[in-house]
Image (cartoon, rainbow, N blue to C red; front, side, top):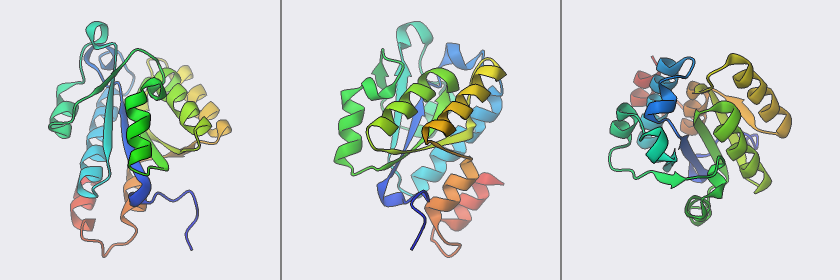
Length: 184
């Protein structure tokens, strides 16, 4: 028997939130967030975990940065005007149709769209895992306060490496070597 908070790839999805040109440019730790989000995306692709991408008001904030768009290949972003991704009926329907129970979050900003999405997912009975090394805010205080609030609300704070190893389960998995190369 496994602990209920360990990620299970059959019921997990990755949600990449609003890593867009104009917002990304002013983030703290933007290079690390970009690099770690790419690792998480590639790892989830190797492990066949569904990936969803959102863009907040792209007319004003620009589109997803090119490196993330490239990593996601043909994935079309879900465009939204609400801070919470759960304001998208398209996203919520897709999560339910795929039988998703656990959602890994990466993106920006930690204290706005990531926080509100996580809280709404929790309210809708999803288990939320926030990859702390793949989220950021402009100000450190906002970022840290959001991580504390997420923990208090029941979200699980994780890292890209932790999430990928949980999804793999064992070193004998077919994807182990490829995923291991990503995180080195």
